[in-house]
Amino acid sequence: MGVHIAQDVTPDGTFSGYASLFEVPDLGGDIIQRGAFAASLGRRGAGRVRMLWQHDAAQPLGQWLDIREDARGLRVRGKLNLAVQRARELQALMAQKAVDGLSIGFHAVRASRDGRNGLRRLLHVDLWEISLVTFPMQPAARVMDTRGDRALEQGLLASIRRMSGALQGAASG
Image (cartoon, rainbow, N blue to C red; front, top):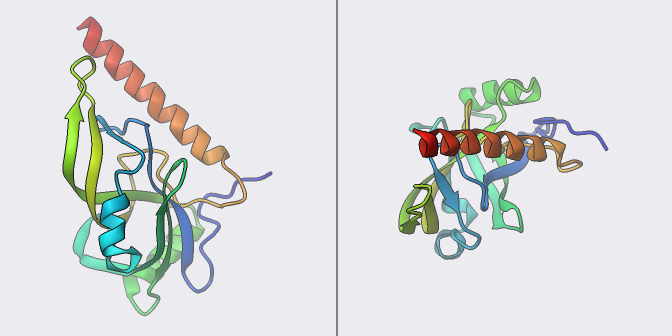
């Protein structure tokens, strides 16, 4: 079973991936709990969550067709608006695997902080936008081929190793 990151970008600009993963610390020390997006998605739906480039509100790229929580995280399917020059550029970069990151823009409605390790657990978030990015805060949040999960597993392991190293450094320092 092969994995082809960003190979899922179709000629019409449709792609899918994970914008966020549950129970995995990101590089900023946040952990998203399962169910954290449910209320926001129930109110807003996929069509009203913006698709941006690098979280820049002046650079919309297209539309999210489907956003849903599954066992792993926030699964997304979107379509680039190929009438927009930047979207055409990104389609080419995604096909080349030069850009494959996804990142969420949100407001933390309810969160708690773990006093032992300093991580913030996001319990309820208001999801505003999901961006295509060069470097995602959640390393495994990627445009990915649905035929395989190896890239997701590798991203998860890399994220866990980085957070583990940071926590060990904080505990010993």
